[in-house]
Length: 104
Image 1 (tube, rainbow, N blue to C red):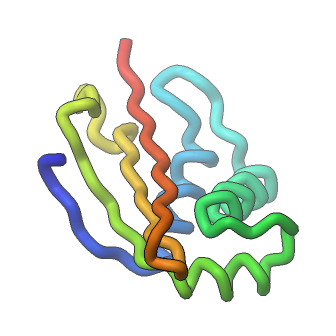
Image 2 (cartoon, rainbow, N blue to C red):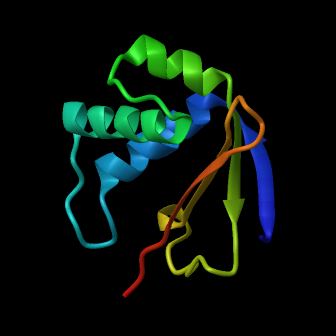
C-alpha cells in the first residue's frame, strides 16, 4: 500500500455514496435515494451488520476503525474512481476490505 489514513465513519459513508451516485467512468450513477440505500448497504456489510436498520448500522460502524488506502493495484487513471476502504471490526481480529478501480 502506498498511502493509508484513518478516517471517520461519516467519511466512509460519503465515499460510498459518491461512488454509488456517480457510477463508473462510463456508467450512470444510481442517484438520490438508490445511492443512499446502496451506500448504507455497503457500510452494513463492511461493519458486519445483517439487517438494514440505519441505527444498528451506524452503531456498529462507529465501533470499527476505518482506513482509506491506495495501492499499486489501483489504476490511477481517474483517482476519484480508485476506492480503498478497510474496516477493522470491533473484535480487533477481523478486517473487511473494499477495493475498486476503473479504467478504459
